[in-house]
Length: 172
Image (cartoon, rainbow, N blue to C red):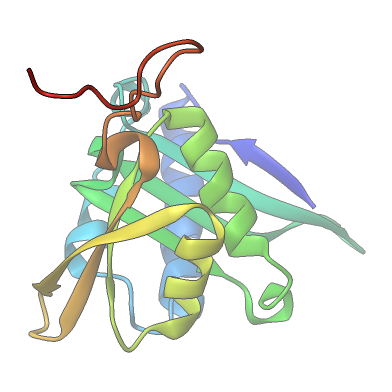
């Protein structure tokens, strides 16, 4: 499996690729991809991909007819605006989504997303990628939803004592 970042400055080729990705999301997103996220992807331009916090990655596998799409991940605003991952059914339970989300995290530095509590597969993918639940919200469909963040964004690194430093000081 190969993970690639998508970017194309040719407007005709870009629109064609984007249409294919949106069709992939419709076919394999299990109707769990938010309308807001799909709309953001549909309006995406190559210039927007150059902005901090935006990334579009695809997972492809070698097939009989060349490279075939196995998964898609789109993040905007470090996940605050959109965080989408969809994987073809043939490549589920093979850590394809985890690899995509981990690659997003490595590329962007920090990430957050919201996942409905009844979406166990997506929650498992997020936890396996190193995200941690930081809040319980009501999602866009009214379902209980977890807010997940990468550790770098959720808290400042702990200040550890240096060698020889006193751990406790007695009050005087």
